[in-house]
Length: 259
Image (cartoon, rainbow, N blue to C red; front, side, top):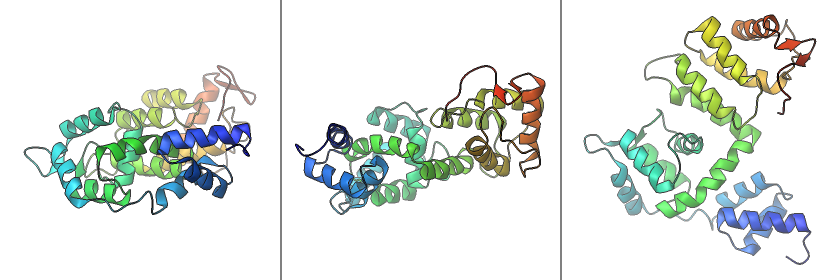
């Protein structure tokens, strides 16, 4: 540690606090990833010392703690108990990341296979290990590629079974949750626009294209191309912003922005 710079020492301490690793392991993982947290976490959690074989018997016991008494699934009450045990709010976005890791098909549900196989793939066989992993899962939202995967996963996870589109109220709630992590200053205007002008379910294409729009087009729309291949709804949104004076001459009027 003495040979490391102050910033590197701080990163080692932060890495140790999140992963529970030793100082030696923290330094090795951070050095291997050129001192980038995301890469270091991936190295740590994919390494054999962190992915000890999950004990199936312990996983069965864990599943049975949360399983619904009338169905062979974990449903809303079980997930609420799981959140209490994890000391996270059921509305916390990290529960979306947990569901993404478990490849859960539906919001507020875990099948036995999703729950057990998901935890096995993470090398987790106890509540303590799952709690230890929560800070890492939260940090995954800062990785652009993982955020994109989680964002696109959220569409299928949040929509009603058997439906191709996502109910507008649900979509708005998910956008507000997701864009609280990846700051996009136009999210509130987008939600207001949908309620005022659209008021219909959201297609998968609109869902996926909005993230690209938020990523590529600056909030003042100075680089927006009206001839671009955006869904009609996004083009209408741009017109709405101009009509309401929210955007004027390539400037966002109501607040400074940060992406």
